[in-house]
Amino acid sequence: MRKLFPLLSMVVVSMSVTLAWAAADVTITGEGQCAKCSLKETKACQNAIVAEEDGKKVTYYLAPNAVSKKFHGNICQETKKVKATGTVKEEDGKKVLTASKIELAE
Image: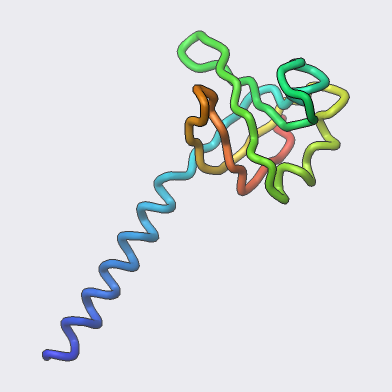
């Protein structure tokens, strides 16, 4: 029994961490645009999603990771409806989405 308690506690901790991580993911749907070419807000090309929330337009800037860089060619020269999943945090008053998945929306 003494050996079982530490094992069970590790299982509970790992399940809690997994659930907390999964709950942190959000899905954003909106207009995928280049923050440089379309929005004219950055000096270098960067993916952005302009979504409507509570009647207001909110811009999510995508963090430069492999998923975001691979998708950039789809929206650099034209705006397209996209759906992205990942985690959101605020940096310098801007919402930054670290995408784990991006796809064109219908």
